[in-house]
Image (cartoon, rainbow, N blue to C red; front, side):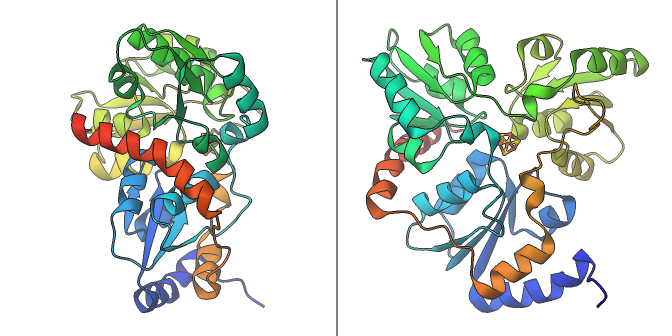
Length: 317
Ligand code: SF4
């Protein structure tokens, strides 16, 4: 039997989503066809805000599991679907609840701030959530002198520590995409493309951050390329975002920073790319796989996210 092309699912997806009152939320790291299909595309913060405020009966999350879990935590009355339950996250996996509980116990008296890239169990152990868009502002909103635990990303944690000057103990987790950018390759690209600006996600290692012209979250990088007068950028984050950059400014040049392992040659997140048009279609049709979380865990995990949302709202983020 001949295989369907991914675009051939679009009509069926559109029919089902209208019939079932579905909202499709997609992360910037999805392939461009899925970004274009979605009702809303954003980074973790914007997607959380959208999950918490929409009129749909069903949320289909084109992203990874911790994001779909966050949507369920914020909208427990809705059915939340994730087209592939194997769409995990190396960063979320690097912080297991039992180990993290021991870490908190070993560092008593500290406010626990965790990046939204964590499981529901880790959120339930946290005081405040944050995203790479608002981590610095969230930490700065805490009273001077308050001691902090930051998890799970060590690079983002070190970046936040440098930016805020606060007393922070950082969990030793990493994202396999952002950890892997090659400084040497970035410097080579810069010399081959004079005038290009290096723009970097804060989950990247310090040497890569040190050569950056701009450091920001995925949404921050998008905004930068939109408003900056420059015309060429070397981009050290997941390349899915380049689709939106091209849409905003098609005449600018966007160069993907390569990873250290040149045999792989690309810096895509393999978890994000598990979501396909065919899986979205099947998931909408069958209404599974569905994200299911215990009620008590939902209410415990809601607290740090709600606190983040309140602070973000107050600061106008
Ligand atoms: S890019 Fe990194 S942090 Fe984002 S989902 Fe993939 S593994 Fe997780």
